[in-house]
Length: 298
Image (cartoon, rainbow, N blue to C red; front, side):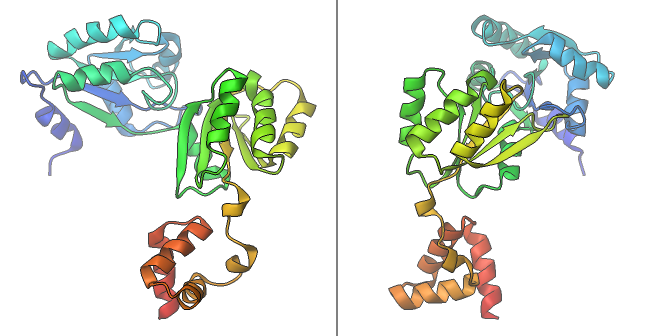
């Protein structure tokens, strides 16, 4: 069986057959151990690494003894640098694109180069890994079956309130990045627009030494952070769907199989419709609800 490295080297050919490749390499969001073996191999083997901040990336490369050449690629030079890197790719180069932390293109530079590579038929290969918003989401305790990640909240209060108003009745968990110096103002907006009792989670410094999750009502979390004074670190803000869309306490106290039977009987619904409703009530996937239903029938 071919190794993945062999597959990439053999099949990764652009329109000109040069073997050029653009790798999108996820890097640690804090803890340097959060990088894959595949990512380390690719960073060693490529011709150059395009990075957001050469100083930041050099820390990672030095930690793992990687000496690949670095070039700067960030939001202020992206327009011109993407074209320059495209020339290298068309000449047969293998380039790894990284950002300071996480996956390139997720609230970070990368889209312009990726789009150019695709337009010029250069293979784009994702090397998955750490992602701040996903790490925060799965540890938040909020439903993960349906969520929306919207990047950074608007810096201006009026635009921020407008965005929050648009998700007021959303059935999904909302996930945002926020600057630490704006967090108190943003939480005040959440209280103003979504209400004092809306459940929120503030994930701070995920994977780092001072990692912290603050979970509770928006008003409570706001007062807690006000008492601290300055808020520091990388912030992910998660907002729960409104409680009127949460399952009622009595429906949680019975098994999924019992609840499905209740709905079928009370609403003359078919099995599929009942399962879909129970999955939505409990914030789980339809496949999980189906498994529970089958176990309850046996």
